[in-house]
Length: 90
Image 1 (tube, rainbow, N blue to C red):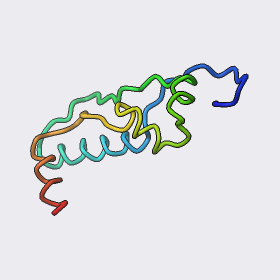
Image 2 (cartoon, rainbow, N blue to C red; image 1 turned 180 degrees about the vertical axis):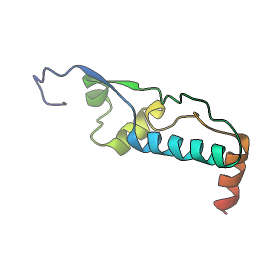
Image 3 (tube, rainbow, N blue to C red; image 1 turned 90 degrees about the horizontal axis):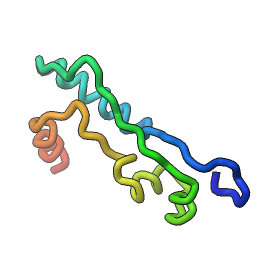
């Protein structure tokens, strides 16, 4: 996609790891008796060849670091999840 002369210009994508995180949070909400909603959408991010070249993005980790919207979603979250994450990181 970054090769000179490539016809690829842009795509829309969601980070599969983030989709997995959101799915697990939705299950945790359901186990806790909370309704995560019928539809949970991880918003895709527009990724352009220009962004990849300008920011020297070569990997998914690079995308996470340089395009924060690609590496995070607040979908299916609750305040108690953040508190539990902080407590478990100690």
